[in-house]
Length: 355
Image (cartoon, rainbow, N blue to C red):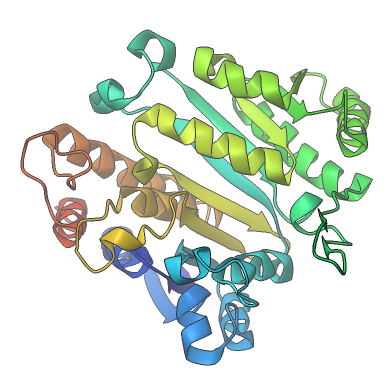
């Protein structure tokens, strides 16, 4: 198979972790007989510095002509610490999601047997956790209008807007995921308070009869935030709106013991994008110490979701598990043992895949 992959390294540790994922992708392509072409483009703070736009038209064109996008991270403390900044790296991320139609963020949460002790939760609570969030990504309060401040600057406002169509396309994806897993779907909302949440619940209730094999549960977001810590194994597929999903998926990510381990996919109408869930971690940028495994596992998701190549995806997941078992890890997971450099972990993973 021929694959055209857009690379958006972004900011902070993004370029370093993407480099390791590229090594792994090349190794898998070599092992399974695929031809891969990469095309790199700028985004985030790096793009602001270069052309004044966090998501330039040229970058968008690179994404459009690719089969999949492998993305690093966006963010820079120069902008985080300047609330008055008119152009921000995160605007590029929102613009990219909008222009590429990336309406569904797929975030799995699972545990690694060799790292159960790293989780802040007790082993018996998390062992066997395997859930996935589908977060609506292009609507809600992050995109709703009007937004801003009054003329005096004394009030600020953001508008949360959802349509039936936006909810339905994500919900259908959730039902399809559930059919392939444990046939359990949880709709996460705040229907006791918010009109948009009531529309979410009504829309899912209308769709449910089309999927009689799927059990549907409806829970308020605050209850889910609590139960994710108490008993994460109670969940399988969860669907929710943009802001709720943003918060809950970060909460769920620490169940595994490290945010540096969780991958994600953003599925849209024009292309599919794959990225680690961690941020740009600017403090570690350029030091060759960042954990690349989440980005590598995002590449595994790319083989599965963008190219329907399950064996290739499994090969990557297997070698990541092997690296954890053997302690071929960066300093965040080393626990007194040898801490490998980011590049060394990437080299080891690629080498194992080619054996």
